[in-house]
Length: 215
Image (cartoon, rainbow, N blue to C red; front, top):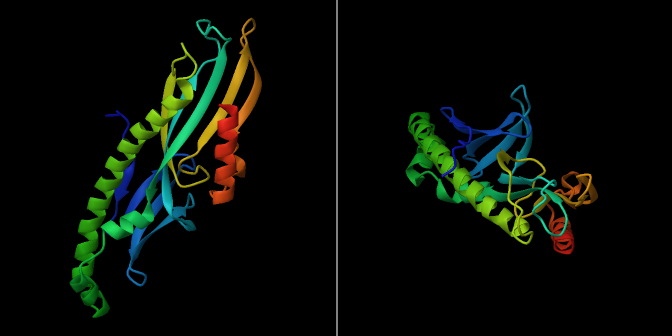
């Protein structure tokens, strides 16, 4: 298992996941009026910024381009792949018993708060384990990017969790062929430009199509 630990904390009423890209937090809390868990990205000062419906659990692999053993010319790859933790799935798995909701609507907050304090710990453990499992899964997905280039090994793996821009199931990164003499990357092409993907189905399909052409 990975030595990296996702940063997942709890308060009495919510779960807080560190967003590694924004250097802020994602707060999950139960909304009894809609019977579902909701997640919001917070601003650095702790205010709600926007609601999100999934966490992207991402692994990045880097292979340096100055690799003389590669017979077809040196290459450079810097690729990320992300898996998903769905907030909807959390809502399905962690619902209060009907008696807890009945107590809440009757104004008995003591029973409801006791359930909150207990359930956030279970959800935090669930997210920690899912993140570590999905990091490994995303790492395996990167193997399919690097394995066609015989003799090229991944020099470094990086891991992060975010709820912003990076869509699950999409490869992001840069693919370059390099000048074998000067070790200068040339003919670089984005596998998918993260700035222009908003996780809608049309753009995801376009990105996947581009990936097939490039790789």
